[in-house]
Length: 273
Ligand code: SF4
Image 1 (cartoon, rainbow, N blue to C red):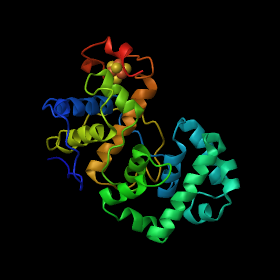
Image 2 (cartoon, helix red, strand yellow):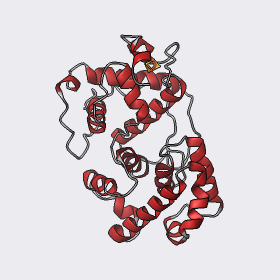
Image 3 (spheres, rainbow, N blue to C red):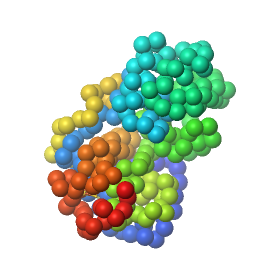
């Protein structure tokens, strides 16, 4: 094994996803993406709390809108647990407005602070010291936190080894005939975590990598993390890049780093739009 296995149970995969060829296929995608673009420097943030706020704000919007809201919050020094605790809800709503659904998002951020205060005395250190599975369940129980947000917080703020499945991941796997419309979030997460965590020693340590990062290096993107968390970090970020540039609503397969893996070109127009 190249990397340590996650410290929680991987979901049992249905037969079609348990195919012995799939791990190599998935790691093949990863290698092709790294080879094209290299490390992407996700998550672009100065602190764990900024990642958490960004994970909430990025729901149902694009990153440039999140950046506007984060800029507002930074300008008035609200990107800390204590400042966010004390700011009136109405003021917070105005500041996060550029990210859309601003009333809901402001309320959900306040709910997170209340959870942190009640369960961990306001300490992110204590919160992130919890076992992955326990903390994941607690985050998922909060209003406004679905699996993608919970896993973004765990991976990018807490450096827990959890893969973040997003709409692009689903679209790419669907178009490549690996999953169906019915495949669940947990099944996709398990599929990718199994593929990456069971890769042969050294096989993911690519010497030939691209050098075209999406973001400048930041304190959080360069934070120390385990090997597995680093792979999940990079793979998710690369899939976001892939979805932004090639695997859009209308697929642009020409020149895509994953084009050599595409077995049925018709699938790109018929599925995953
Ligand atoms: S754009 Fe085409 S080749 Fe690239 S990932 Fe999407 S379906 Fe595959």
